[in-house]
Length: 289
Image 1 (cartoon, one colour):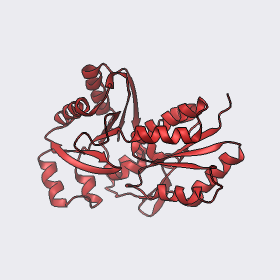
Image 2 (cartoon, helix red, strand yellow):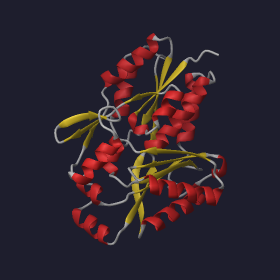
Image 3 (tube, helix red, strand yellow):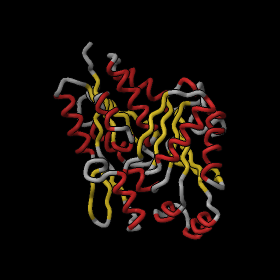
Image 4 (tube, helix red, strand yellow):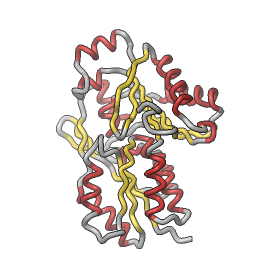
């Protein structure tokens, strides 16, 4: 069977390199700027290097969206190879990159390029790109892939625990006073995604309580978690990611996991120590969202 579709995503998908290569997923790197120097996420800077600099040098990185020209180049190369590009994109609520992909796709003839705003981030986006690539390898048509993955994206849950409020304060997302108080109290903010936007919804007193709360929320929101591939991403915090995996396996009997490092783009905002879990439920953000 000849594969007609080639899946494209970006480094915000936080897919392990070996998985992206195995499933022939084209990953476009986003850019991160630190102290006036620009780096390509996963190409000229590793997540580990970023987190080390954030901790030791107290730098506040900024990120840059992918340009229409960058998308056009990738789409053109795929079309010239005789395939149809299907772009599984980072949430438009978190970056202007998706709009750049729309502009780029519009420069080609109709039905030559397909783009999907997943309203997802990190390994949530990665799980969707992976599912799309599996469909492509089985000969699915681009319209079918976009429709199926779009429907799955609406049920994809993101639950995030931020290790410290410090980095959110540096980026201006909360006040320094609130961060100072939160860090003294050792509060761990819990964040979820609702319609593509990151929404803080409660806090836990300690890391262990935060992890237990994530598992409880998975039980409330998830569907057939035992038979899912659950994604866990972490920002230089493999120990906590592994602890969360063990809690999920114990509670639900889940056997399939993908654990990945949060890349430089998302890590620049979330900060080191962050841990996130991704799974399918009834609807994104839970029943009351």
